[in-house]
Amino acid sequence: PLKSMAKLAAVASILAASFNVFAEPVEIKFSHVVAENTPKGQMALKFKELIEQRLPGEYVVNVFPNSQLFGDNNELAALLLNDVQFVAPSLSKFERYTKKLQIFDLPFLFEDMAAVDRFQQSDAGQKLLNSMNRKGVVGLGYLHNGMKQFSANDPLELPKDANGKKFRIMASDVIAAQFDAVGAIPVKKPFSEVFTLLQTRAIDGQENTWSNIYSKKFYEVQSYITESNHGVLDYMVVTSNTFWKSLPADKRAIFKSSLEEAITLGNSIAAEKGNKDKQTILDSGRSELVTLTPADRQQWVNAMKPVWAKFEDQIGKDMINAAQAANT
Ligand code: LMR
Image (spheres, rainbow, N blue to C red):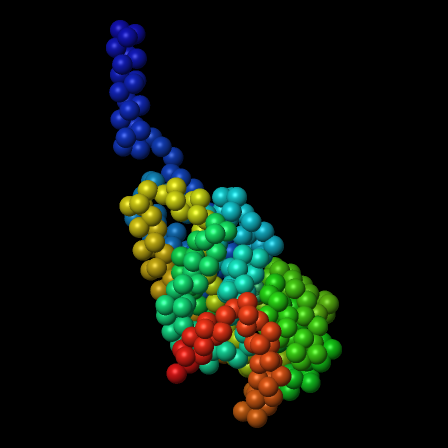
C-alpha cells in the first residue's frame, strides 16, 4: 500500500505541475509615483484588471501608487533588479539610460498633444522605445499625461519674472537648461517631495500638468499658474529584459495587448482630465490663472528655445526634424 500511495502522490504532483492547479499565482508589481486619480494611476489599475481577467489564477498584479514602493530615485534600478516588473516614469527621467529621450523635454517643441502623439507613433518615435535595450530596459509603449504649466508664488508673465527664483524640476539636464535660460535656479527633486518643498517655500515654483497639480494639491500651495503649455509630460511604460524574456511567448502577447488597451484608456483619461482638473483648480479659487498674450508667450519661446542647440548632438538633428514635422 505504501508503494501505491507513493505512486499516487507522484502522479498527483505531475498533474498539479502540468495543470498548475495548486500553484500560487505569480505576483507582478507595478510601481508609480502619482495618485490613483490620474491617467497613469488609472492605466495601471486597468492593466491589473485585464491581466487578472485574462490569466486568472496565474498572475496577480499589485499596483503601488504615490511612490509607496519605489520613487523617482530608485524605481528604474529596482526594475533592473526585478524587484518590480513594470514602471512608467516620465520621459524626463531616463537620462541615465539614454540621452535620446531628452527630445521630449525640449521647450516649445510640440504645439499640442496631437503633435506629441503623431511623433510617438511615427517610425522615429517608435524607434525610441528601443533606445534602452542595451541597458536591459524594454520600452513597451508611450502614455500621455499632457502639456506642462508653470506654477509659482508670484505671477510669471514674462521670462524676467522667473529670474532668481528656485524651481523644482525632474532629473533632466534639458529642463535644467530651460530654467537656466531665464535666469532661474532649477532644483532636481523627486516628485514625492514637491508638495512639501512648495508648502515650506523652500522652492518658489515648479512645472507640471494640470492633473498632477490637481491630484497632488500643488495648487493649494502655489498662488499662480501660468498656462504656458511649454513642454510635454508623457511616460514610457517599461519592463526589464530579464522579466520580459522570462514570460512564455503566449503570455507575453497577452501582457502586451492588455497593456495597449490600458494605455488607450489612460490616454482618453489624459485628454479629458487636462481640462477638468484645470477647471476644478480655477473653481477652488486657491490659485489664479495667468494667461499669456501671444507676444508674452513669444518672449518665453525666444528665451528658452536656444536650449535646443545645446542638446542637438546628443538627441540628433534628424530626430528633432521628425518631431517638428509632427506639428503640421
Ligand atoms: C514629476 O516628477 O513631476 C512627474 O514626472 C510625475 C509623474 O510621474 O507624472
